[in-house]
Image 1 (cartoon, rainbow, N blue to C red):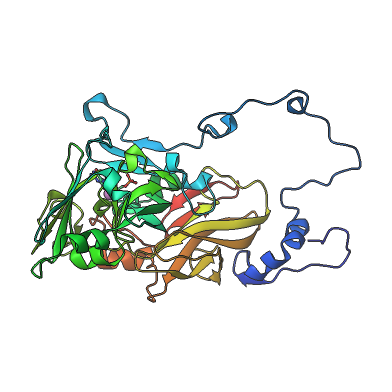
Image 2 (image 1 turned 30 degrees about the vertical axis):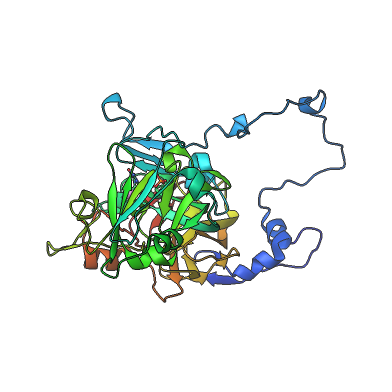
Length: 427
Ligand SMILES: Nc1nc2c(c(=O)[nH]1)N[C@H]1C(S)=C(S)[C@@H](COP(=O)(O)O)O[C@H]1N2
Ligand SMILES: [Mo]
């Protein structure tokens, strides 16, 4: 490798086996790209040709902007395949491998719905707070809008995300198919604590049952402590009103808690002494263990990370310098560290975390990699600020087995072959 325009030999410092470089090389960004010849081609002195779109005025204005037509493949993937008999039951997954940064555009936020997206008229929608309160309250949207609001950037992850890895043999799938029940947005709304304090919580109340206004009337029991802590009744998602598929006109946001508890189309909050034992906290969203017992009420999503670049579908084009990039998150707090490996977890080096690193939000990590052109197994391992470390697959399977379905957070692997293709692997 050679620094362009300078005959001095440039040697990147290797931080882990199979080409993982010391993250310090990012500080010398131009140097490393030039040294490795990543992407750019040497330009001569001739002027650039004038393209056709510079020879006439461009398109006019649009009332609501859309992505470039050249980005038409950057879309959610719908599973199971659309079927009129079960319309709206299933998932639309975020194309994580085609996005960068940490915020999910609203049209690409994943959608997990149990009974379709209701078409709610906001003027007719009401939120009722009742049960063990001094004064039941009912809110119109207009009334809710008058309360002070807060914004926070928070990920939502379905408890079933990455469940495709609960198999004995690795099955084909890309980041979207395997991990795409994960998104992150700036949510804005009224603190639930404010509304509960106004209703007056009875001392015997310990839980809040949240119910949605969909045909499933999806309900979950939430500990009162969470509701008084950082729960938000959200009206806005990335600055605009919450999208219909994500809970319009209001959704409950329980930062860090499993996706299912973030009740969409929120219509009712009932304060109770105990949990209501709704179907989504008894038959579903419990974690079946190898001994046949099950964990119930597994609330925070565990510390986790995935590599989005490279990943299946994004083939490497020849040996040389690449950035390994991915997402890390924890429902318990902030990401403290992400390490990457190119040799299936035998050696590790720390990645750079993109600032700001926010609690219960997606954190983008990046690490420099010099691909030799030979086989590699790429992994990432996250640690959060409570000290929790993402387990290896072997550790995870030993503790939980492969029947758990939910809360899969083991280290995942992409195998890179000599052609530069990536595939899902167990290592
Ligand atoms: N009312 C209602 N709320 C719901 C659901 C639902 O089907 N109905 N799905 C839940 C599930 S399983 C998840 S993972 C999250 C998904 O949120 P999103 O669709 O906005 O990404 O919403 C939860 N809230
Ligand atoms: Mo979910």
